[in-house]
Structure formats: structure tokens, C-alpha cells
Amino acid sequence: MKSFVLVTALAGITLLSTGCASRLAGDTYSRSEAQRPITFREGTLLEVRKVRLEGTKTNIGTGTGAVLGGVAGSGVGQGRGAIVGAVLGAVVGGVAGAATEEGITREDAWELTVRLNSGESLVVVQEIGAQDRFVAGERVRVLSSAGKTRVSPAL
Image 1 (cartoon, rainbow, N blue to C red):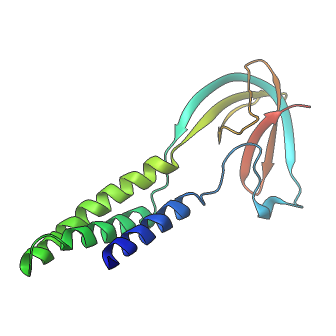
Image 2: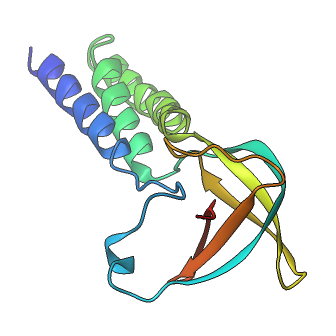
């Protein structure tokens, strides 16, 4: 029974922690960007391409998977068998946990190619936001703040 409670608690922690990843959409700002100057340039959107942002690869998924696998593996056999089962379970669980974390946090994104009014061209990759509807040929603003750049439709 203790193993079941531990496994359930660790699985919950993993899901909560992977859900806390910051958004990278054009309509999302970090707290540190609030009340700071943002520079912008205007241009025309040349190309819009849907791409994928890989998921996070922290130790949270690996560690949680290893603990869950170790607990599950320790229930196999007695004595040395339980120890071997725990070790193998931890290794397999760690690999599975890392893969699960990366898959859960993977996101769709836009690759936006912009020709600025200055003639310069640039590409910005950003998560797809709820309101994002980009179309090649439309006028856009390229906003830069705190080392981050995002694209939004021109007003």
C-alpha cells in the first residue's frame, strides 16, 4: 500500500512540474519584461512554417521515472532478486521518465520569416499562441525586449 501511495504521489508531482514550463508564444510575456521598454520594428511576413519545439529535458522526468521504476522493480522476487529488480526498474524507469517528460512538453511553433522595412530579413521561432493567425504577406511588428524577440500582427 505504501508503494502505491508513493508511486501516485511521484506521478502527480511529475505531471504538475512539467505543466509549469513557461510559454514561448508571441502573446506571452515574462514578469521580468513587464514595465521595461520594448523596441519594435515593422515589416512584412514572407513565410510562415509550422515547426515543433522539442520538449524539456530536465532531471524531473528521469528522477521520477527512476524512483517509480525502482519501487515497482523492488517488488519482484526476494532478497537479491528484489535488489536487482529495483536497480533494473530504476534504469528502465529513468529512461521512460525522460522520454515521457520530453513528449509531454513538446509544442507546436511558428517559424516566421520577416522582411523588415529596413530591408533586413530575420527568422523568429515562437510557440503557437491561442490568437495567432499568421499569413504570408501581412504586416507584422517584431518586438525585442530582454534578449527575446517575438512577432505580432501590426495594428
